[in-house]
Each structure stands twice: as C-alpha cells, then as structure tokens.
Figure 1 (cartoon, one colour):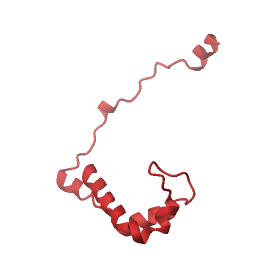
Figure 2 (cartoon, one colour; figure 1 turned 45 degrees about the vertical axis):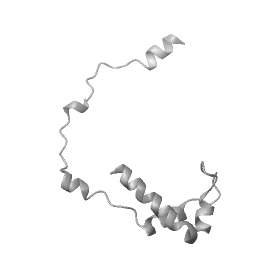
Figure 3 (cartoon, helix red, strand yellow; figure 1 turned 30 degrees about the vertical axis):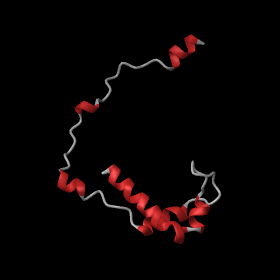
Figure 4 (cartoon, one colour; figure 1 turned 135 degrees about the vertical axis):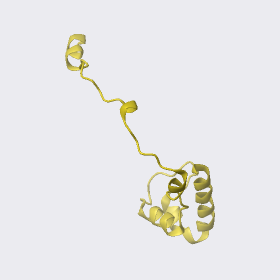
Length: 90
C-alpha cells in the first residue's frame, strides 16, 4: 500500500506560485468604508423567506418557519441584532 501511495501522491518538483509574489491593489479607507453598509429590513426578510422552513432548528430552538410566521412580531428584535452584527464586523 505504501508503494502505491508513494507513486500516486508523489509531490512534483514544479515551482509553485507564492502569495508573496502577488501584487495587490490597495483599497484606501474612504473607498473601503463605502463597501460596508447596514442590512436593511427587506434584505433580512428576503433571506429568511428564501430559507427552508422545516430545517433543523438553531441553537435557540427556532427554525426559519418560526421567523417567517412571526416576522411582524420579531422584526424589530431581529433588525436590532443585525445592526449589532454590522457594528462588530466593522
């Protein structure tokens, strides 16, 4: 078995590209800040509606069926949570 592995998985001596050899363009803070915006309610609702309702629940015991059924009642809390996520990421 070792003989087969040595033949099949033998590393070639070809020169591999290195990340250090790449030249990336820089994104200045002003331009970068334009890429970060808060989620809006319609985006969050559309994502929730696009998810399958009967998939296994999350750690809180709720699945997307609950979120869809009670969106009107919980949307303020969901959006408050989403705004905190945006602040943490930024």
